[in-house]
Amino acid sequence: MSSTAGRTGTEAVGGTSRRRFIGAVATAAASVAVGPAAGPALPAAAEARPRGTRPLFLGTYTSVAGGGSGIGLATYDDVTGRITATGTLSGVSDPSFLAVHPSRRTLYTVNEQQEGGVTAVRLSPDGHHHVLGTRPTGGAGPCHLSVHPSGRWLLSANYLSGSVAVHRIDASGALGARTALVTHSTPPPGPGQDGPHAHQIVTSPDGAHVLAVDLGNDTVYTYRLDTSRGSLTRVSYASLRPGAGPRHLTFHPAGRFAYLANEVDNTVVVCAYDPATGRLTPGAPQPTGTGPGTSYPAQLVVTGDGRYAFLANRGHNSLTRYAIEGGGSRLRLLGTVPVGGDFPRHIALSPGENLLFAANQRSSSVSVFQVDHCGGELRPVGSPFSSPVAVCALPLGLY
Image (cartoon, rainbow, N blue to C red):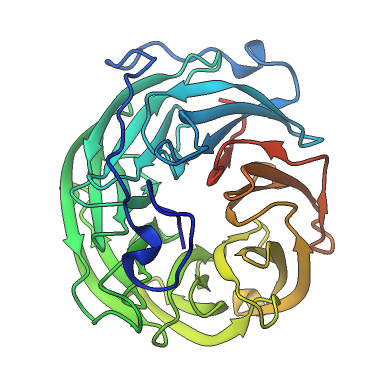
């Protein structure tokens, strides 16, 4: 249940009651220049940043009490995990989810508002990042985005509208006009839902298909992206059991299986994926290890060696550990560890995968864990880092 900009603090399952806008979002003047991207190559990051530190970008809501004033800027030590605040990129409204271009020169964020948008930010090793501009998504409450592996297309999901959008990315990293907008109209909404609610859009590992997860329709849609025009054509869809509330899909690196976190019924599902057709085949629901209490799975991450998966649980406030077996076809529950915060909305592995970051929305904090690749253990390091209404943590390597 992603918190939407201006939404009340109470999380109620089903429909838009969990994502209700309660007032107009104030727009702040950008504190950074908006204009064309710089042409020359970026200087080496090692010359602009202390050795051993890496950039960390933090998503928040700017339109809620106690929220941030833009994208949080920080660094982390790539060995110890220690986070140090370096400032804020202000003037970016409700940047609740972040993604980086394959070149690592441009950052993208949703603007999770009633009139949704996506914003591009030119990155600089010296920390003087540059907003390139914002484009409308054509829908309400965009809560997820991703960059196509070609680096030419930005994909976004409008939660409140139940639609997905595509924008062209030009050579500078700036966003061009929207090239596609598709609303999920069938199948009908699941129990307790008032309509479609697109929660994620991501490209398959083979690059041939785009998959969109819709919580409201209990469905994962598969599209083909026309890489010359930026249009989407639906080729299939996979239905989950009614009331599952699928939220976030993560692929195994071999590309034949994917793992789906179901927010409403507190389960995970292993799905077979056929690269030739783009068809996704869900298996049986599996437990998250959180017991009978109320908990809402948020997101899975999978290690690059394909051996372990980790799941964030909101409510139980834990991270579930799974061993991946059978070439990706099975998840074996290993147990849970406390996340050290309240309502972990987003988790991310560092580029070296020795660290895992958890953005804890209700405690306004980011927890850091050392990842043991021999046994899949997660060990907390230090105290959680304070960050206003932390809903996304994006650790990067050098750029």
